[in-house]
Length: 330
Ligand SMILES: Nc1ncnc2c1ncn2[C@@H]1O[C@H](COP(=O)(O)OP(=O)(O)O)[C@@H](O)[C@H]1O
Ligand code: SF4
Ligand SMILES: [Mg+2]
Image (tube, rainbow, N blue to C red; front, side):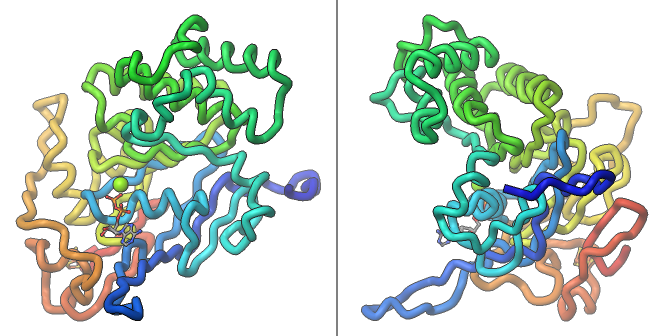
């Protein structure tokens, strides 16, 4: 755990990721030799402060889940660093990781597949307490009951099984479980993407209430910009393993600078018809991260591409205070 800080030292961010890369080897043949790599995450940097939500958005396959799994050290990074509360955990061996793991929890898109169908909801929520030996049996049951009530479930539902709950309730079980060890950071990997829109709003509001109460930090992953809008303070837009734009939510929605962000925004309905948004519809699918296009990864789909875009990768740079974009034309 971190040493006590000198008075007056600003607290380090809850999470700081620097130049994170995850390249999955593609193994071929009898000898399983590496025959190339999937460049799933290719140099991603961001920070999340206490009580802050960073939205991470981008089309399916651009590396969002890999960022989440690598930050949690469920998979090892190829390179780069992951600082949690100031401590670099990117190379820590499993045993030394434990106290840091407690501080970071994850909730998934499909809570059903991540919840053991043979355990009661109460056992599922209490399991992290059991594993970390945090409470005696009766105290554990009380702690679980309190968590149930906090996420909007009834105590009596502790003895029900996952299949007896609705999708929204199952996500509440997932949230209660994530809260059990009092984490500082929760990674939500498409946590509301499988839910009806009205239920999505309820779950997002619950997450926002919990954030205020507990000064929680969130990395909120979604393929849909509209979903991250309400909950995020800042948003990072990913394309093929890299962040292409990164700024506060309001700036991203009102003054997007990257053509890819413009394209994602074109798909988001504007609530006020008086506000006109530039329409940009990009053609085609995300190219394969096995052989990303040279230069700017986005150039084959970008309507503004010039020769330079095909030859030289644009750096993510600050184009205005607190506004980063990776595009030669900005
Ligand atoms: N364990 C793995 N081995 C090889 N490739 C993987 C592995 N996990 C993910 N990938 C690939 O990495 C890329 C990014 O995947 P992912 O992080 O799941 O994207 P997203 O969450 O944005 O949809 C995809 O091309 C995916 O197929
Ligand atoms: S660098 Fe070129 S291809 Fe890439 S987004 Fe900007 S204009 Fe488009
Ligand atoms: Mg994913």
